[in-house]
Picture (tube, rainbow, N blue to C red):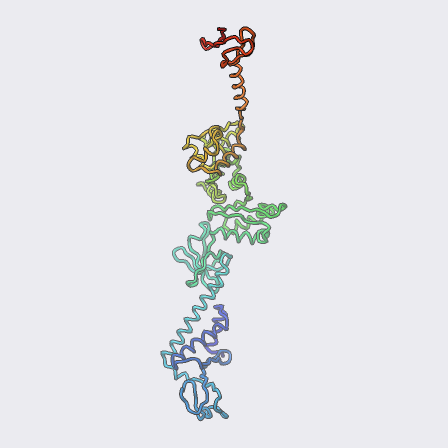
Length: 484
């Protein structure tokens, strides 16, 4: 029959998951520590297990010498021959140490050290095992409850299922099977924290139900949840011939129904991720049908979604749940309006252009702050300098614009590019007009000699052709030539 020691070692190996070598080494280290405390050194101590761990003994290696100087490390030839026939000088003997040579305190210390070391090893082993499994699904059984928190039997260790990580739709009974996500693992204990409310829990359920997600043919862009009420999942495919939404829903909705059943009836919206924000926002407001989405402020991620009157409550959802989840999914602040509300809004310049597009009413852009995607810092700097109209901006040279506080060449180049793309600028031919005015002025200053009709100018005092003397007088702003 196996001894108590053998049974304890077997239990540590099988139940606690500690390796055999580690258990034996721990016991050995504890006994050697007790030997060192008793004899002052452990350099000659040897620990040997008997049979299948039915017992353990400590031996001291001692050198056979003629005159013993250190009884801990040496033994006389005479004493050696009494122990072993044929002992000779210089031989090394392993001599068993009688347990009675250890006092009670040393024995208790060895036991306590062994127990504590094995406990720490067991904790570290479990921590390493479950830390590696963090983010995975695990199955356990309801064990007990305290203040709404449930303790779950996971086999080797007890899991902690806090109330905040329990879905409000679900309730549990003692002994009931619980499938949950390993959300956190702390070394103290170790403590294995379980969750059924994390978005990662839905991700793992999806991977189990949809092979295309598991093999990365379909990727999950993001999952957002209001646990117990609604989950939105944005997916996309790496292959054009694979419909990501259809694959997740499954034939006749079998796959999505299995997921809904696992979540105890929680509503799930699976939608297609799109890199273009307008289309993604429209998809995110599912199941509502959205007429159009307009970007109000791209830098601040604000957008406006226009829906029919009948779709307003669907788009917003009960207590704003649907639009709130859409906000989280897209990382945009989305305002939902009906067509009538949209028309009545006090719109910003960006939204006014969107409205004109919606109702096919073109509006001329005159102001700099009406330009799309223009940097607001530059607009503010220009406004403070008194430049608010596009016409005023175009009339300034780069040198004049660069002299304005907070303006730089990048802003100027960007605004000019936006104007070129969005505004039809009609340029007048100032040079031609100036030439015409000069020509007209010149023509108005050319006169004829009253005698020979030769051309004259105001600077002339005599006619260059006939020599007649000239003088010019002005009357009622009309110029007359008179011969003197």
